[in-house]
Length: 282
Figure 1 (cartoon, helix red, strand yellow):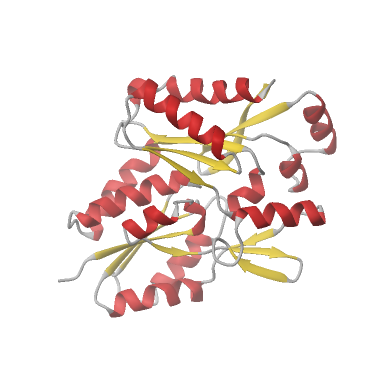
Figure 2 (cartoon, one colour):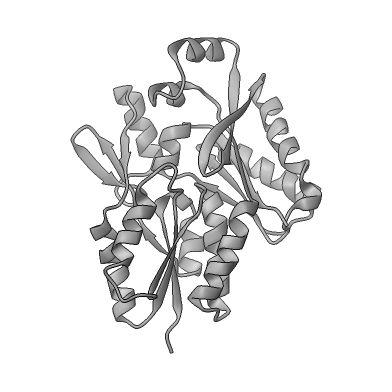
């Protein structure tokens, strides 16, 4: 009897243990430093990326997997008789989704379902993990698609970015904004809105104040949270991420709060010491 396999891309930022536990396939994006190309999470990891940025003073470029990359990943599963549900990076920020669609069209109709997460990082991860659990329960690809698409508008993704340096290098803030922000120790708050990263607030002060703001923003929706599970996602800020996890467990009563680390693509936009909270609303 055929089953449904769940696929995603490397920007979903699910840890290796969760990917292995639920047999989730991953198609990596690319990270490009001048003439050197690496696969996100395979031949380049966030720690090394931060080292390269420090050495060169430049951010890498990122690139979507090609349709051929997706076809190569999908073909063994389809030939084994299983169906695929792929959930990937928002179409607002990357051609990853479109390339997956092109690859899916190379296979018989209905064998591969491609879903635009309208999210990034573990906002995608929440959808992927939900899909994987549904597949393990024996649900069909159509049933999984319905569950995931119903959940997409309910995903809340918010990050506190520690430094404007990476946003500045990436052309997302001016030199003047970077200078003033650094001088005043201003840290931006970024949410995913309509499938894209959006600056929603700026917090001035020490890290403790910034983390308290992040927690307060999430806890304002405590009564509306889906209590199945949530994520605390970070870039080179493990100690603070685990602190946020403990506080969320204490204040929400949620038993499954996963801590994951951002991959190269998300890290290259946000920079080190970024911490985010991701959850679904009821």
